[in-house]
Image 1 (cartoon, rainbow, N blue to C red):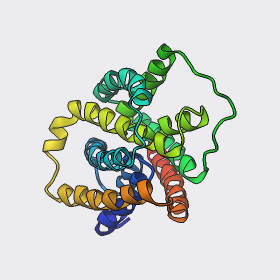
Image 2: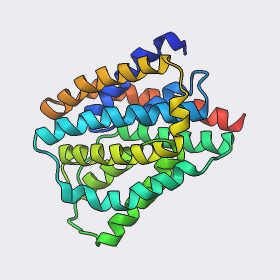
Image 3: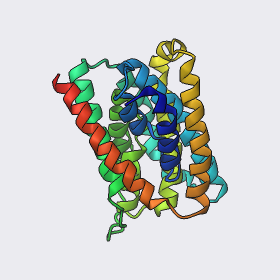
Image 4: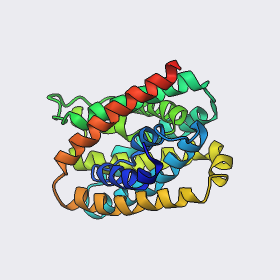
Length: 244
């Protein structure tokens, strides 16, 4: 992909992810995998954009009355410290690209397949919620994502939240995990070229529009399907890099 198109691609990714309360790191990683950006630069840039985009999405959903703090904090207790631990683990390029490809593939299928609420009303104990958060946090830290792409299906399918409540909790979850994931990558973030500011700006603009669409209007389903297909195709590229 020509890098001249990257700001537009990231704008669209941020718009679509913010509309469902996500930061979009899996999408940014997929786009950056098609450029010359290194693993470290891609993860740092994706997490920085994640904090911005998910933060804007959270404010939009919170102001619309969809955030439930008691739904969010048990998962954060487990995820935040493990996200920090995961970010300190440096995987070799092959396993890193393979793991990132798996996350991007999961994000693609999650985007393509609509979620229908589960049929049960099971309420798991608090330690299990913390454990779920810890598992998501570790994976998020390793790859450089916020983990909302995994949390929101759990919330909806378990009937702990409706779609917009899940979006609000996922946005808060992503912001915290991304901040913790950025801490060990602070050196990389400060050494990014000035052109990275333009990419973050594109994400900022897309998130403003996407958050408003998601919190106040219907979801852009057609564009979401396009994004899902792109993510699935990008995961193939990541798997190819893993085997190179």
